[in-house]
Image (tube, rainbow, N blue to C red; front, side, top):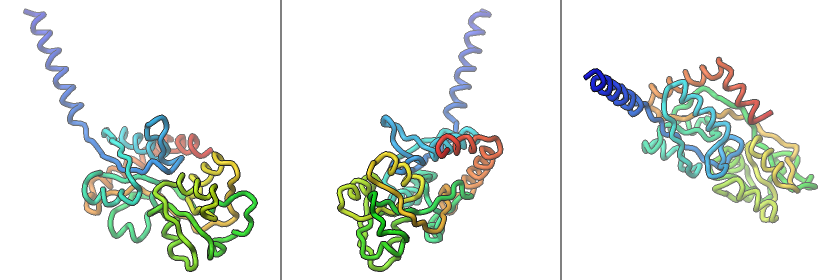
Length: 241
């Protein structure tokens, strides 16, 4: 009888623990795994600074983080249509985007740079892009900046790597991209260099739906916690030092 009672109690404990696990909050996160070192594919898995940071925030919130890869220009529409709850993709909190979604505090400051082929000294500022064939990533900040310039022949790509390959094949004269991914692509592709020209700095933040104040507050608390406990600095050192 005692053995039977013990087995029943064990069974109830297992069921209770299973129920707690099932009740764990799931947060669906949209990203674009074409932006190393922030998010990229490694052996078929989505990894990177943003991904690890989001997972660490998930631990703080005791939430199950589910990452979904999609085209960059489809991220905010997916957020608004409730296909995902959060977007993290090296995304700049521009005024235009803030009309559609809400952003957390910035978690990283970057700048736009120009990638050219080695030996190309004709581009020393963003003004020198006039009359040139310039590759940008669709919907990225570089796309916004170059689109506002007159006399630039713009080629838009869905992936940064496609722009880099076009530059190496002389199909375009330059690529405008965020500084950290640009440095990664230059390291991995011989014959390329970053021009001595830099635009204004920009700040990356995490996006949520406009009316999702509760989740926004949770993410802010999570960010503050990983900054306070040293996790954020460890990730910075891992990916950028």
